[in-house]
Length: 537
Image (cartoon, rainbow, N blue to C red; front, side):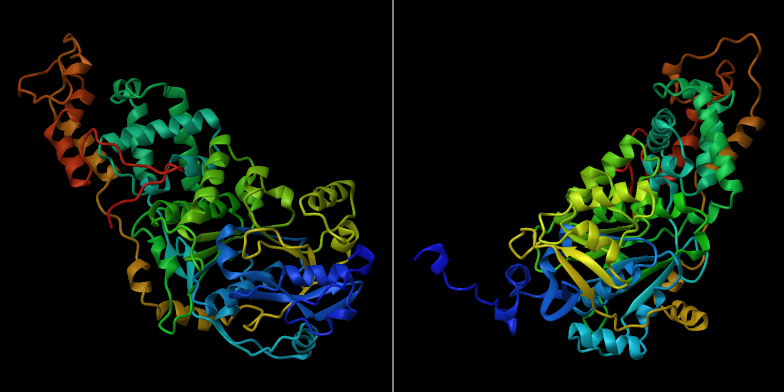
């Protein structure tokens, strides 16, 4: 049979009226005709028409291959997150959402039917039913509505903290040495005042000999770090660090009815602290990576993590920080976690990270300025070949419409599909603040994290050691300093020739301190890619 005699392309299964559809539409429809469980995004847009017979979907097992939701402000990105989160929850997959603007809490309440919802549902052939989904609400440091989320300085680690403090590469490496010192000496860093106490000690006259023992850390650099910490505290950042530390396994909970819990981190109260909240999101992800077991390829993700305002994470990031993000995203897939970065354009995400994002939902882009036009052209180049004129389509999409390409059940990219998205079934807006507060206080997790605890840690112990040293007899002025090699030995009561710091470091009080903090002297805390560490729960 010659090519001219070949029979016309057959319609993919489940697509009615397909023989009347153009060949490119048939190919797109075939690319999304999955047989296994999938999330329904919407219906195909072609030549200005919505074709409800051609449904655009994402295979559920491919959600841990990561993704990108991008688009200009006001194009419907938040509603897309809500739509995906609802369906994940309904299929038993826990979800994490960062609520930057304060309008995601409505996912816990049934939506309200109106003309717009009815019209959209009819256009995309959606059986729309109002539904709320099981939610937990969190707030960084308890600022705002939600269960307080805190991290200890020890577990947050030097790489993430350097990003928050806006340290340069040299200062970041120096902060790492300070953490190394605290780890070795058993000085657990619970909150900011603990770290400040350790740095203050190292920059003091008593601590200079200790400082020299930390390879490459200069007094000047330690002083810069100390000033940055002091300024950071003065900006009201202390509540975010401390105990009880949030256990990120809470994010993987499933409700009693089998639906996945949607964890909503409320961020409106810290919108003016973008470096802080974006880095805290990375800590949550890094902590999950550190703790979760390897599971390989699974039928559905263990958790899907939506990383909103992702450009804030990458702005002014050091090479070490970017490398850590890249490695975390690459490896966390094998632990059953899918990560979706949410931002305005793909160029906000570094190429090494973007290359690992298999699922794409691109909302409309603007092209009002030369920079906008450049970003548009760059975005188009990141898509597979397409029958669409993507430069034209991406600037003409309406609110709630997007260009989609995902990974098929076999892991291959699907055809590019302009899509009119479905309407979320939950409330598209915030719930009443009183109802939100009530939900928070009725949560079984509230009593676990609500009240901050300030136990004995590095600050209290160093303060006690300083007081003990001050009450000890002063050494004779002419006595030579004892060599560093003698540190850690017992001291006789009449030994007056050692320095104050050597008396302290070598004392039984110091060793008792190390034991009381649960870490043996000389044994460093095991740290992950990001330098994060877990305390024993």
